[in-house]
Length: 138
Length: 480
Image (cartoon, rainbow over the protein chains, first blue to last red):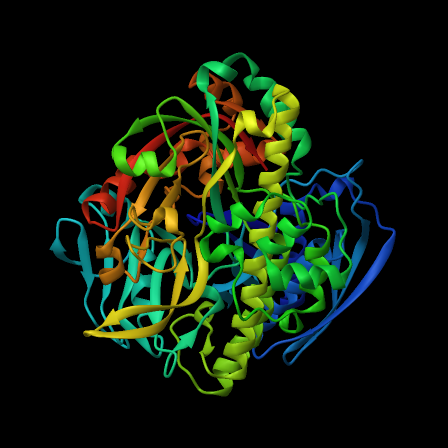
């Protein structure tokens, strides 16, 4: 099963992500951004970046985390193949992002994501684990 | 489905009555026909949400191209009292000073009919476009800060266009109050390489031919005639603007909690206009607005050069003149009559165009009699409308009108329904040549994903928010 799906939203793009644990949920949400941006198959692991992010509550933490994740591409020109969350406690997260610098010769960018929005963002516990919804401005 | 009950006020206005924590009513400008489509999303709820914000004056407004945004609806207009009101990054949007400009030429369709492909190929080569596109300059931070302070003036002083262009740019292409020290290093970094790029998504450069004139007198003042070739450029402040919005939203989400302001949606995060947070945001937002004006000024300059090169004609021969440049994502301090008194207000236009009446001092001399030229771009390949600003908009909607067609279909849905179709070919059959940096963009931007521009323009014309001057048909389009 794919770890996220796109749900319709008129102006922008809303995704629903799932994970067996909260850690996996956060990692999957981050991976979804890069799955939308590019084909992760084309991305090699050449470097690791550690992200440490804080938030006021769990939803705020998720949005802040995804803002940092998106900045890896929008600000630092990196493409990420794999995310893993090492620490998730209280309202802070530590995660590792593995990938390489964007190379227009080898990588095709599928779409532009301008920003991660707070609008109707949610995290829910489900029978199978966890589910989150986030809207991107595209 | 939205649960909001709308009360019909007249043929083109619907009221959102005050309920819950709303401080003022909402008014949606629409027709029965457009309203049916609107009912499908949550934008009426968003009009109500905006009415919760402190210091909102008179009404929370929405234009007929309204659709579901985040926080504020796209097509939303709201004005706030500087003494007790707020400013909200979500009320401006991520693409600060996204806007468009229309360049007229002396060319007739017959002059370029068989050169159209060459013109487009040349423009596509000369104007950087596409996701994350970078320009030909990489500015030093020092130089970039000058752009943020001076806007279109910086571009003109650096050889992109002439001082005449600034005369016909909203606010002469420069907002007072910009302070580059309020812009984060991240935003500066993102802005450094993207100046002079079109971008992607709904941004475009389009060749359009004047097809119909509704107001001969205004058209003549605007320099428009039937069969004439014009160029419409739609772009904004690129990554710099997105980053400024993002930075300040995060700061204001925290701030709202600290001051204990209760909002129906986090994306409505805001700060009092007089607070440090509010002042800093306005100073940073003004920087992005100036950057966008410099950007469009450069794109226009290269458009002129590209025309000259391809057609081997002199600037005097082509006479490519900037008719006007408008921004449609912005917050500005402007004066309006409120309860019989003149009041300075902080007007947010998120997907709405300024529509100032004849005689307004903000207009250049040449347009004092006609009112402000209002540029309404349609969706990809349909063309645009040129309208003029009105006294009624000044009184009713804080001098605002619609900004475009407005989406009715999500990008995912558009991609689904257009699967397997050659959009390029379909557009060619309709008489529009399209060159695009990304294939996905074309699928997402298919014409049926948008409201009918004719209907949207019909509503603002009939409601008196702006008057039809001319309709332009697209013949060639470059999509980012």
